[in-house]
Image (cartoon, rainbow, N blue to C red; front, side):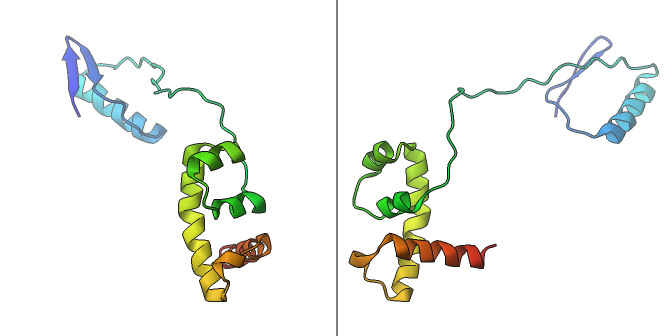
Length: 130
């Protein structure tokens, strides 16, 4: 951390996060250090703002999860499901390996998987991780 000074002015290079008690202790310390009352000037903290985009958070339904198991590309699924590429990639990266591992343990043939099997998988996952 750098402390920048200019005459009687003191400026810290970056904000210091502290609660009210910590601030009061710090304020008292600075007053003693400088030998006078320290003027407190509140400035709103600058926030980095990313591009504002409309985000649609919604749960994945059985049909959408079933489509993740298809040989369609992520780009095709993105358009068909009206979801972002990142959403499709991340859900596919988590769901497909977990589901296929579960299906093999249950003796399902990968060519005969139905939405019923996905529903059973989701119920078991919910029971394991309430």
